[in-house]
Length: 323
Image (spheres, rainbow, N blue to C red):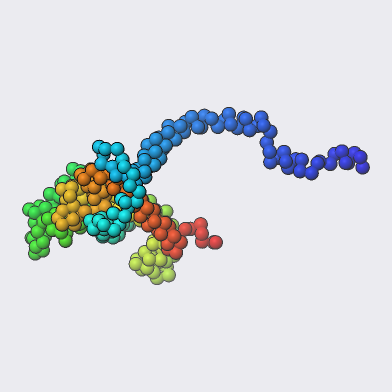
């Protein structure tokens, strides 16, 4: 009995040893980790100095009266109250931006998906067409392309001339308050290459056996698209939808170029970011502009949260099939 008692481990002894490594072992782990922190230090410094600190400063400036020349003066919530209750142009910019997002995002994603499905069936030349359709995504955000687009849709441009030739007499889109926004939206739709490539990658991951089985059951092309393509592609649709909505709320260059920088005609292209630029740099109300920027951040965050919550009811993931 004495031998057994001496060999019996003390309660919690080995388990305690497993839970609490020796001090020397902890020291060795820390010594192995410091090179990682050294290599991460440029990113950490960049994130702190170029992102977190400017965000904190801009948040403080949103509660001040700051004109870029004089020291900021604390005014509390006045910028936010003026924005929400005393500035009709602010709400006009919100409305025009929402209309633009509602028009541009669905059209862009629909065109990207349609072209991706056409390219999936190609055997020869797929790489060439994929690169050709992707090129506008690289060029469309530049000021030079926006100015060319304005010339195409202006009075005497190619687009009004073509429409006149087929009996549609609308004149220049740029000077028409009812059509100027749609000229900007079409420029965004023209840049469908990036979501198209993502859609094409998602389509190539869908097993052909699913379509073969559906065809044997008598399902046509439309039924296969609704019952197979859309559910299997829903994670990709969700990804593209979130990215395009976020990007569309931040559109600036096309609106600035097409409207001449002031949202004309009749504020029809006065998007949120363009009005933010006008208040911050043209009117030198930088405190008001930073308050607008934070309101935009909160709005985009809220919309993204709603999208993620709604995704539970329409986004299908293959690994959730057995749950």
